[in-house]
Every structure is written in structure tokens, then in C-alpha cells.
Image 1 (spheres, rainbow, N blue to C red):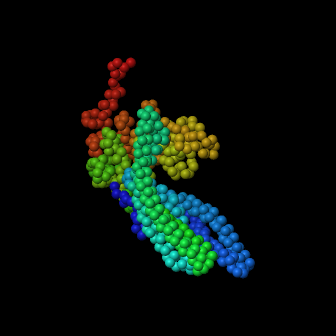
Image 2: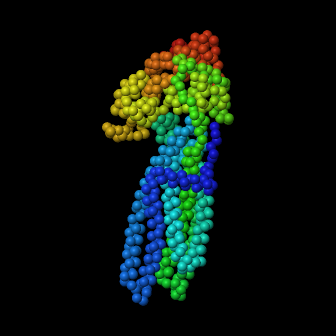
Image 3: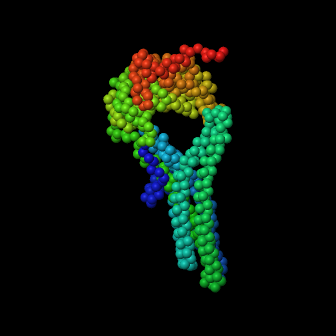
Length: 621
């Protein structure tokens, strides 16, 4: 498994790349909205400077020996117009900001999960570091581009405001302008450092927060509710959740205290400079060196520069912090495939001869033991092969490799003589139908739960193949008995929101009923070249299991199939049985041959058969 690269990159190149990517997303989401927001931001930035100069002009005109009525009226109209702009632009800006963020969130989320589809196998989703990165990518992908665009435009507006007020200060007191400007530099340095530290902290507490989410979801999971109440474990798990939250809070608290100390000190410096400047200006006005309007302009300019500089620092650090998190989003998009896929992959032809495992070795990582050790076996076209073995023998791993969720570390798997690594994974999987032991229970309608077995059929809206698959799986009577038939929502998480729904909760199914829907999904893919059945009868009662296996025997006749089951009676009629033990092929043959050999298969079959032959235990009535 390729190690995850770790925390976000913090260099200037990475930051600039993030800004470019954020603006590209915003532009793609709505170029006219982005331009409109930029224009409004710049107008908002210039209005305070204009108001300050108009206010100075009004005061100077009022104290003049002969004030001009026309001039005062013109300045008053200008102030009124500025007031109208000040009143309206925030609302327009707020709407544009929200709309850009909404559109960017939609685009970025789609790109993120489209990016995860590039991971052909499963290894990424079994890597805790990558899962932490993916969680941060989900959090930042929809939010960061909008925040960055907003921050960049606000920064541009802040620069306009600062330049306008600094120009005003330079006319009154050059040294004061320099002092105010220089006072912001330490704040910028400190805030950027705090931003990096905050991003690093979020990476550190990622695993802790993921554990907290796990406990939180466990405590509200309907499937877990029975055991939690029967065993009285909710209190224990709640304590574990609280400890994880406390650990994360300790890190957050430490960070907040550092921010409080740094920003408090910087605030005192800014207040001291402003106070000293105000004293100087008042004394200068008393001596007649500056006008009353200059005092007003100076007070507004100092406050404006400091506020704009504080906003500049705040927006810079916010954008920097968001960009550090956004790097996780970009890292997911840029991550190389977990399995190599040839640029000119060979098309996958219909299976004609069979599938061959040739000296296949596999382990999930160098730290794990070998799951498969030199496996050699063949699944001939049109024949059925049963896989048997104790838990951990390598049966499920073999199926994962056959579906190319992983590649062998050594050896090859051949599809009609062609190495799976030379084939297109998507085309390969399109030729496989399967029922997995850990099948999914989708919080969707009954029809959609089956239709997901072949999305082309589901999207076509043709209900006939879905119903036919349900009939073959013995699920049609179950589904038609539901309140809305195939449109019934099978979930306790959502309300049924269909056109004829009454906002009632969805219908839960039993494990055996879900098993039938999973079987129906496999039947929907019944025309595929290879059928994989991993414990297809698990969760069914004896009568239902017999009916299911009878149907499957008929369905797989003449088809290439791989059967896996701990119930040996369910696979004994396979054309060939393969017994795995500690990742190796221990035995191979028909049921009769393996029973006669007296090996592991005969031992396991005998144990199961004894349970049916033995009478009631003594003393049981």
C-alpha cells in the first residue's frame, strides 16, 4: 500500500496553486457571479475613503468665514449617495457570496468523488491516513474555493481602502502613516504562523475526530441499538466518545489560547499607536497647524487603516488556513491510481476458455502475513468451482483479486490467457456478477436496491428486468406486499418523499429479506460471463435457503461460476471443489473424491453432517 503523503503542503508554490484552483472552480461555477462580487467588493472598499474626504470637506466648509451653500449641498448629496451605496452593496455582496459558494460546493463535491472513482482498487479506502485526508477534503472542497475567492476580493478591496487612507494620512502626518503601516507587519507574520499551526493541529486531531464520529454514529445506529441496550454498553461507548472529544478539545483549547495571547498583544500595539496619533493631532489642531476637517479625516483614516489592515491580515490568514486545508482536496484529485491501468488497456472479450490463477501470492501490506501463498487453480468456462476453507483461509481475498480490487504481489491471474493487469478494470467488472457475503443494504427504494446491479437498466426506467430478477430471487412477493411496492423506501434514515408519499418512515427489512434483494441484484447481472456467489444463502431459513440454492443451480447451469460457502451442502454439487488452507490450495476434486481422500474437506463435511445425523442430546426433552 502506497503511504499517504501526510499533512498539507505549505510552500508559496502550493499556496499559489491552491488560489488558482479555487478561482478556477469559482469561475466554472459562475463567471458572472464571480465578476459581480469582485466589482461590488471594490466599490465597498472605496466608499469609506470617499466618505472621509467628503466629511472633511463639509467640516472645513462649515467653519469657513463664508461657506458656499452650493458646495455644501453638493457634498451633502455625495454623502447621501455614498450612504445609499453603503446600505445596498452588503446585501448584494452577501447574496453573490452565498450563490458562488453554493455553486462551487456542487462542482467541487462532484469533482472530488469523481476523483475517487479513479482508484481502481480498495487499498486507498483501507488506509486510515487517506481516509483522514478524504474527510478534510470533503470539509474544505465545498467551502474553501468560495472563502478564497471572497478573501482575495476582500484583500483587493482592503488594499484600495488602505491606499486611500494612507494617502490621506501622508498629507497630514507622514510619520504617522508609516507607523500605522509598520504596526500591521508583525500581525501578518504572527497570524500566518498561527494559520500554519492551526492546519497542522487539524491534521493531528483528524484520527481522534474520526473515532468520535464512529462512536457517535454507533450510538445512533438502529442495527447496533439491540446489542447496546441488551449488553448495556451505551454508557461505555459514550465515555469513549467523550474522551475522544476531550482530547480534540484540549488541542483546540491550546490553539485558541495561543491565538488569544498573540492577538491581544497585537491589539495593544495598534491601540497605542492610534492613541499617540490622536493626541498629536488634537494638539496640532489647537496650535492651528491642521484644520478641524483634518482632525476628522485623521481620526477616520487611522481607524480605517487599522481596521483595513486588521481585515487584510484576517482575510490573508483565513485564506491561508483554508488553502492549507484545500491542499488535501487537491491531493486527493492528484493522487496517482492505487492500481496501474494501462493507457491502452486491452478490451475484455467474452470468456471462452476460463480463468487461471498461476502461482499467486498476496498480502495486504508488508506488515501483514501472506493471505495467499502460491495459489494455482483454474475455473473452466461453463463450469462451477466451489471454494471451501476455514475463516481466514483466503477465500474472500481470492475473490477480491479476481475482481481486480488488488493485484497479486507475485504470480498472475489470467482471463482466457490474458493477465488481468492488461485488461480494462471497468470492462472486466462489467463481465462479473456477484453476491458478496457483506452485501450492501442501500437506503433507497426496493426497485433501486435491485436496479443498482445494472445501472443501465435502472436508468432506462424499464421495470420488467428488475421485477424478473426479483421473481427469480424469491423477492417479488415480499416487495409487492410493501406499502408502495417497488417504490417503497427501505430505510429508517429518511422519510419517503416520493410523489405519493405521506412523509412516513421507510420500511425496514430483515437480514434474510435483504439477502433476497442482494440475490436479485446478482440475477439482474445474470448474463455476465462469471457469477461469484459468496455465502448466497446466509441469513435465510432452511426452506428459503433450499429454494435459493435450487434456483441458483438452475441459473448457473452452463455458466462459469465461483461458489463460496461454509455450508458444504450448498457447494457439494459444484463441478470441482477447491479447499484452501492458510492461503494455499490444500485439496482439489469433486465431492466424492474429496470425501474418499479423507482430508480436510472430509473432516469439515463430516462435522457438519454429524450435526444433522446426531439425535437429541441426553436430557433434552
